[in-house]
Length: 247
Image 1: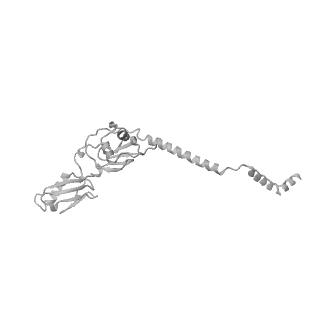
Image 2: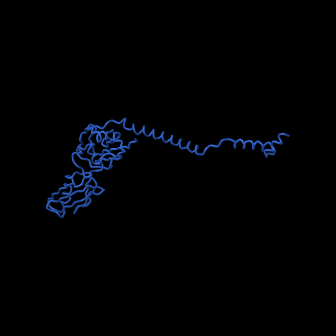
Image 3: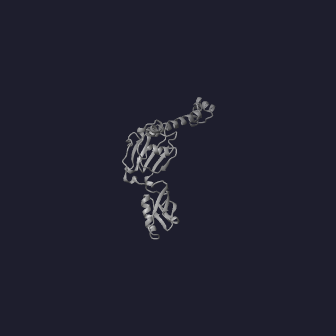
């Protein structure tokens, strides 16, 4: 009888309805979670993951050159570096003695060839200027008697495989023509130094002439602390990679 009175007071007509009403009443009495608290928890969780990822990158980045040997200060000159080799986009003056009509100023095409009066599609890239002069003389010998040709390099970029490439946090990343006795300091002057975000002492020198062997170099010590011991010789085909500092 008492159970029936309780059921009627709570608006339920059976035991199943009463149990459901009791659960609803209990859930209504539980404190509701503040939506802002839930959002903050999500933000904090994501921030924790991000911080862990950044810490991992820092450790990886900072230790990337610890196991690399320092670049040698002096390197032996190869026979290939004793004479300049013409490269694509070099500007050449071809002077034919006593034949101004056959002389011309030309730019080496991207395919490495040049064209002159009476001579077309002559391979030039990879040759030394004196070798190219003899080749042009042989080609012109079909038309004039004993031609004398001189090739002058007006603008030098050099053969692609002999260029020094600088990438990353240099002020002006670019590929520069290799010069005899070129050093790391010469390269950095040509590219305008480091950016404000560069990790100069964590730079990597990839030496193409040694099967892409990697060396560590200390550019920051060289440029900003004047440590001449950090200056090293460069070789044709070198790639200088300057990473960004994390802090």
